[in-house]
Amino acid sequence: MSAEIFYDDDADLSVIQGRKVAVIGYGSQGHAHALSLRDSGVDVRIGLAEGSKSKAKAEEEGLRVLPTAEAAAEADVIMILAPDTAQRTIYAEDIAPNLKKGDALFFGHGLNIRYGLITPPADVDVAMVAPKGPGHLVRRQFVDGKGVPALIAVEQDATGNAQALALSWAKAIGGTRAGVIKTTFTEETETDLFGEQVVLCGGTTALIQNGFETLTEAGYQPEVAYFEVLHELKLIVDLLYEGGIARMRYSISDTAEFGDLTRGPRIISPTVKEEMRKILGEIQDGTFARELIAEEDAGRPTFTKLRKEGEEHPVEEVGKKLRGLMSWVDRPITETA
Ligand SMILES: NC(=O)C1=CN([C@@H]2O[C@H](COP(=O)(O)OP(=O)(O)OC[C@H]3O[C@@H](n4cnc5c(N)ncnc54)[C@H](OP(=O)(O)O)[C@@H]3O)[C@@H](O)[C@H]2O)C=CC1
Ligand SMILES: CC[C@](O)(C(C)=O)C(=O)O
Ligand SMILES: [Mg+2]
Ligand SMILES: [Mg+2]
Image 1 (tube, rainbow, N blue to C red):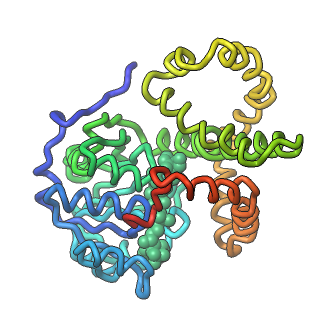
Image 2 (image 1 turned 90 degrees about the vertical axis):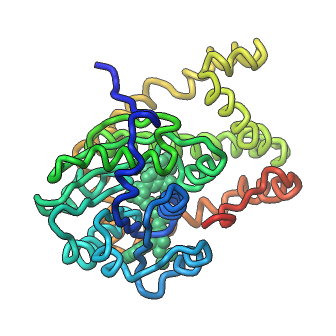
Image 3 (image 1 turned 180 degrees about the vertical axis):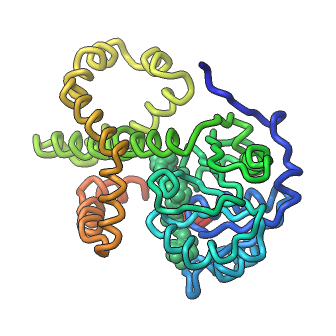
């Protein structure tokens, strides 16, 4: 069965324009959804905790910021775009007491529903609009007249309107310009976690760091290693994005292509694929989610240590220096949020 994909003409913007929206959190996804909804003519307010660091940024954009509970009480569509690990507490303390029959509870990722960390009442719609890209690029592409693809899912359709509402939201943030696929909370959660751990983030950063270390430990200049395994990766990925693996292989030299075809499978070997299956198993059986929540509850000891080690990796130091000399590359994320 092929995927059900929706484009602009399949979605009605007036559905979300007729509602009162609260976006809880104003970080990577929160600022992107809120600003693009606002630009699409939607009545948006932001919910943040007292003393939030994000409050000033949202207010600078002219958005109305309220304490989370007040924003939830005022709105009839509440989108939780705070970190996944914070959502169960925000929901229990500030959202659940303010949910009214017929409200819609929205998510940008399915983790809290998939693993039973949040259980909404039966009389509200529960749906998801999950962009398949980082929030800052979701916003940048919207502003540029483009869009990042998204997934929608309906977990609970109390009003009979949940899918139309999710599609309308997806249109308001540019998703239907690129294509919005209908899925389930389970499929979105498991594939998203797999993608970020194995390929997009975990796999890629480990590949870059190990490639960089291998070259510099062999005595090559760090600057040469940086350009080779990190900077050029973006240019190669641009070709993959434009035309898939075949387009990239068309553009590289035959020498590179022969090396790609004969050496690539030695790096991502059957043992690596076996580990990928193991990681997928840990996602499916809830092991990863339990580890994530336990880590949060313990005050993030492992997360903090590994994050610091990553920040101190030599590839970061040389990268900072080289990017500083290329004005067109250095686009600080703080430009928007
Ligand atoms: N990052 C991404 O690009 C993607 C994220 N998602 C999903 O979107 C959701 C949001 O992720 P992301 O954008 O990365 O989140 P961020 O880490 O960027 O969210 C930070 C924001 O949440 C606020 N926040 C933190 N704790 C609370 C709280 N207790 N009450 C209210 N606000 C709070 C922060 O406020 P303060 O400034 O005060 O700390 C800040 O405004 C997640 O479900 C994630 O899986 C989905 C697709 C991609
Ligand atoms: C790839 C990481 C992501 O899933 C995303 C930007 O889509 C996330 O959770 O941030
Ligand atoms: Mg994710
Ligand atoms: Mg993702």
